[in-house]
Image (cartoon, rainbow, N blue to C red):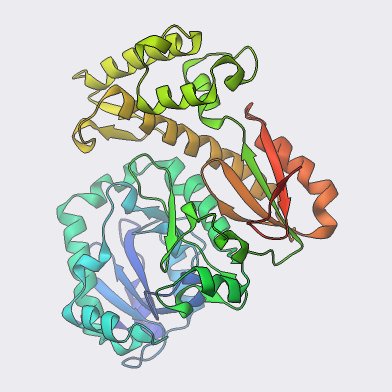
Length: 421
């Protein structure tokens, strides 16, 4: 029985699976390139009974029309994938369910020797995956599917967290696809990328958010650059707006305010007026010391943490419950203690609130030239169009502060020259 589907007639013969569920993976022309720079080469498709390769652009087979393939994939009610955010570059995504939120799978662990050798020696070739024989692509994805099936991913797939699979994934896909403007000369001086063509096009570099972290807080590194922790030694001057000006909104005393919301505590004034900043951070991240335990904020936090710890250790719960509904089993937290539990929850609530806020702001920016180009935990960086400044910025600030988290605004001609306004 054939497994390569290369004509419209063969695709029509496949029809939809009886269960109306299937698994796919889009194999692009080069796995090392940012998905903005590449296109589908092959599609691995499994209907629950058999796996197939749908040929889109490979030298060893005829080419299927990509729009026809998209229609076929869209006709299936539930399509399981690994990395929905990546697949959104090529598909509408309404029917996609990301199995990586059940447990992250490193696809490279299933590479054949051919994949490993080609990615090591010929990584720079734009159409790299068209040189790897179709049977090798098929072998790799058959092994991945077998692993997922054995580990019961498909039986658990219906339980994939809706918030993570939809709102969370969509928000970071929309930000990521914008890229961020650069001065190539300055950028090359401060950053050594793995391969320029993987992430840089003209005056824009593309980021990549990793959504599969234990606390749900996304990291952001790609092609040798850690965008979540850019150095402040002049390197930030490499980033320049493609529109008119950079505007950054960052939250003031964000983590103390998040904790206050978590534990239902109300600061009488500014958080750092009630608890000095140095003492606040020492006790939040290093454990509440006896000499500071009398502060009303820490009294309330201690009581709340005691209850959370009891809940976490109880045989009934036996896990940490995040605001998204995700649960982290005890066995996944190395050497758990109250302080680590607090740190995990801060990151989880931070990500939860930020996702909801970003979703509203992205809605506000629809049809506008202004874009969110960088997200870093307690701040967002916008590349703002000049004609939209007066009307748009007050609306964005209003949305950011809806949940009671005040912000500061900074403006600059580059990311290293931001001045608070």
